[in-house]
Image (cartoon, rainbow, N blue to C red; front, side, top):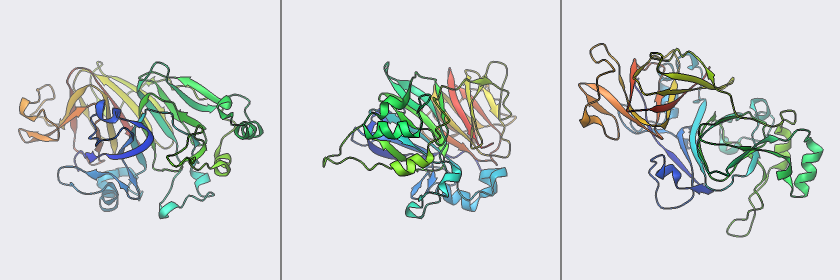
Length: 357
């Protein structure tokens, strides 16, 4: 099973904007409230659909069901794709919220529309941020449940939240149970468990067009908050050796997040490199630059340039070898059974490699 690309699932919310289109190339219709582009998803009716090739028209859930070994490899016992990847454009501030962990999901009323639900730990990689943009991640030191409830009742929740100024390239890991919100002016990539359970503590006093506030979920949220966690700070990238993507010393490999649910490596290179999978799926997300992904073989070394006639949107073939263009905002799922591949950057290329440990 070769590389898979999908139609994005676009989500409109009042805090969204237009940068999913202007900066990431997503096909946005009219409107100024496009908040999320779900790149890889297997969550009820929200399904990634293959956009080209042998599996065109198939949903991700159908591939998990019908080809578990080819797609998932050593994780083939799973009946749902375990990760949900997206891009977010926070033109306005997002509500203050918290997500349950796997154990709490079983104890809370989360069976919405009969969906299988998981906990939701997530990680953010900042793509762009306005000069004054901030994240709200974690509670300040010494904030306990009585204090939080008192501030909520007085509409002073913001006094309890840890603020974090961010810039492009910063990485923040948000484990389940962490109170958080994304501030206005931030564009980011998100990696999370497959879940859409959100309990709102505050929506900053906003009202809808009928003058009504959105529902809050204070009772459920209080059951999920980890009051021992405290403030969240950016991740410190760690230089690692990758068994998946290989090249000479010119490629920089950073492990930016590692938890029980997912691992994220970040690659920065201007030189070609190989992709060798390890009996598990990998997801590539392009954060900056351009390049090409293509089938690797001995007769077509990766130092050969990609012919000009295949430098277009969508996969093409060069000398019988399928070529996928890589550009900012592109997401490609590499099944566990994917043949050897190579990546040829056009200048500097930054991408994420996401997988389940």
